[in-house]
Amino acid sequence: MKLIFYLSVLVGTFFSASSAVQKEDHAPYLVYLKSHFNPCVGVLIKKNWVLAPAHCYLPNLKVMLGNLRVRVRDGTEQTINPINIVRYWNYSHSYPQDDLMLIKLANPANNSHKVQPLALATSDVRPGTVCLLSGLDWSQDNSGRHPDLRQNLEAPVMSDKECQKTEQGKSHRNSLCVKFVKVFSRIFGEVAVATVICKKKLQGIEVGHFMGGDVGIYTNVYKYISWIENVTKDT
Image (cartoon, rainbow, N blue to C red; front, side, top):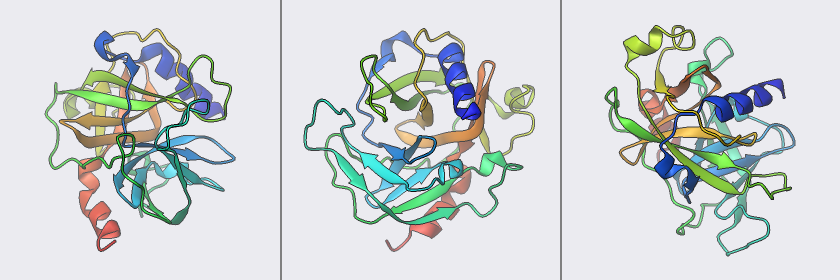
C-alpha cells in the first residue's frame, strides 16, 4: 500500500498536462482490474485479451470494462473473469521495465462506444512527440471502491539520452520516458495514469516504480510486440 500512496502523491503533484485535455474522456480501451488487493489498470488490445503491468497479478482478479459509474448505468458495463494470465518471462523486481502481462478473458468483450480495443504501436516514437496519457480517477463524490472517471492528459516523450541522464531513467532499458512540465492541480485517486498513446496506438504502459520528480517511466510496448503477438495468436 505504501507504493500506491507514493504513486498517488507523485501523480497529483508532478503531472504534466495540457489544460485543454484536463477533463473526463471515455478512453474506451481502458479496463479496471479489480481485486481484493491494490487496484490496477489494463488496456483492451483484442476482444479477449488485456495487456497490463505484471505487478497487477493479484488474487481474485476481475476485469471491468465500459461504464464504471455506479450511480449511472448505461448498459455498457461488463465484468469478465480471466481464464489465463501470462506474465513476461523476464519480469522481476530487478527488471521493472519488463513489467508486462497478458490476461485472456473468459468471454470476448462486447464492443461499444465505451469498450473498444486499442491498436499496438508499430514503431518507436520520436522524441518530442506529444502523446496522450490516459488513466482512471475517482470523482469527488465517488465513495465506491473503484474509479468512475477516465482522464486524458498530454505530455512530450523524451529521448533515450535525455532520459538516461535522469535519476529515474538511468537504470531502465526498453523504457519510454515522458517529461512532466506543468503541475496538475487535482490529486488523482489510487489508480492514475497508466498508458501512453501516441498517434492513436498504445506506446507505453506503467512500470511498478514509474514516477519520481518530473519524469515518468513506462514500459515501451513496441519492444515487446513479438511476445504479445506470439501469446495472443490464434485466439
